[in-house]
Length: 166
Image (cartoon, one colour):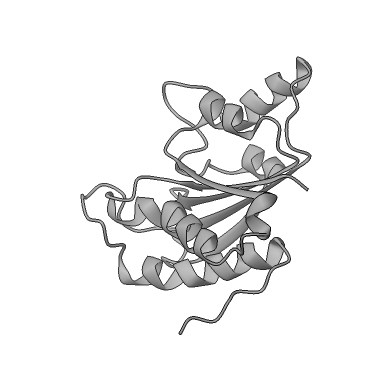
């Protein structure tokens, strides 16, 4: 199955880079054979531009930061697994929507209506973050601790086992 893993975010905005850092770790753990069917990339776009990256893949896994603002704060580093349908019901992850663009869901629905080859399967791993505004290439401790966990979760979804380090 032709699969794309997208690490979303900006790796120099503290916790916002969690998706990018996890994607790099996943890529490091793929064998040459596995890389034939699994593409890894990073992006800091949402909506239409993110949908365009997904065209032609059967399965897409997105990894992104999320910051709940509905009055209930989840512990920093909490990992949520979401489907594309879940995005309709919650506030979007950090990069699946943009004030200057349409939401990812709207873009995917439009692409489907006009017959573009969008993925049949979309999974989203969203990590609750604390700091997405300050420049720093290191995440906060709780988000740093979540990176190996989300990496293992994605590798498991890809039906791979994380390779031991060392």
